[in-house]
Length: 309
Image (cartoon, rainbow, N blue to C red; front, side):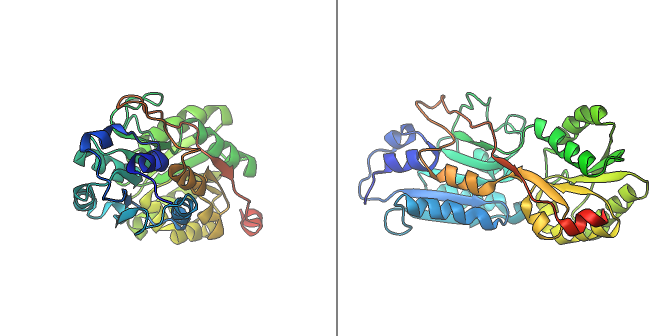
């Protein structure tokens, strides 16, 4: 079944027909969607599956341009390449990717996921009216940090210190989550420790060992490319030092971590590709509506790690 380009852009991200009207009707060209990924995530398959389910087949009813910039590698070059292909809409995964695309185009609609603090990042003007050509799914609100801390306190009632493990160079929102943790901590009788790391195994081990050097310590591992790349190391160190830890993704529990609570990315991928649960409805260039609430789900707790914590 063939759809015109106007229908396609509305489908993928609730993106506006206004940029298409400006470009004119090009009925001889099938719709084009650009995809720029910032991290490896197996659940991205949900995005492709949803497009197929809705009748969009790459090479037949749509042309998909894919680019991958792990941990920000060559992201500016890849963003330029992608924009140069003149897609009708761009799907952006992660805050660094979205910010780079924003610098490259102010007209092509961009739909993001996995972005924390989009207002602070300068991607949107507000949640109700993002403005510009960007909209999407906000990953984490400050209130979720209190949930992470409460989970740790429940699993380790004597908990007195919690370190926020993350790399501010790859997680620009580190201080955003740190401030939220510092606000939530007093009601739980917890002291927050800033555990900033670089993308190096030795530095990560140093930070975790420091947290474990005093009794009644715990750790929250923030969502971050550095953290994801070093997932197995972090889980192993938490076990070695018998340090209770909560993670933002289920994949850490699958790797042996204690517990997680965070985004169900498969839901976000499907919603980004589906018109019925699109992240925005666009009526004009300035009426994007940003979806605020994130789909979150606590993971099951690893019984083996629960006994050893």
